Image (tube, rainbow, N blue to C red):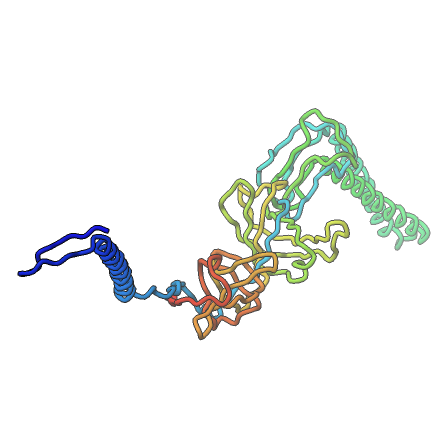
Length: 390
């Protein structure tokens, strides 16, 4: 064993070295444990302090949405259709007489003509001579009638003297009457020939616009042949609009319409003057004929679209952004009294520049989300802001 002598005060102390070594080891272990406890305590206190100082996490804020209360608006019920342009009354003009060779054509397509105006002239030299011959026969008949009347007058003067019998008077009266009848026959034949000659002129049956011309000078034409001219009576045009069977039932003569020819931005006002009484069994469509005043942009045979106003009614009118659609149909988001979003199925009516008319599903008093509906979910809390409308 090792011993060590140390001076403590005025006396000498003998210390066992092994015991001293064990004592120092225990002190080091105790000191290390105390240090670890102090570090752990400090860390725990630090964490408590940080937790107390940190602010609580804010609750999720409700999104702000714009809503509208549309109320009821007067909405025009309209029907859209397409079809072909045509003359409202298309008048084909051909030969009404015996025909012949065309000597002159007096009009061109696009010309305006009046009723009875000549459109083309057929050569008539033979017919003119026939008229002259018949006119001469009329003069001969009149001369015979004049002579017969004179002979009758002389006979009546002599009957009182006994030179002429009553039978002679009857005979001369009959001769006079026959001569007068021959005058009438000759005059009628002359009038007939003049009428035939006049029918060689191809004339307009009514005032209107010349649409087509299918005849040239030198051409041989005859009665019952091809159409030589086509006229639009008074220049009036129409759109023969093809309308679906369901929409056709809502249309009436007098309904107004706006017609837009293909290739033009201008619109022309018109009115329905006839609704087809039948429906095509193949296409399930009927024809609504829309009368349009003359305009150079309206060309028969062209294609045009029409918006027909079939009536009006009251319905909520929403901006297009407020109406959503998916596989289940059209719907809108309504904000209820708890500021929660509700999905509401709706039926969409007429869509126009003014907005979308809703025919069922809402009455107009609800608060409807106007936009951003695709980012919302039913039951979600929102902060509504009412859109002010004029």
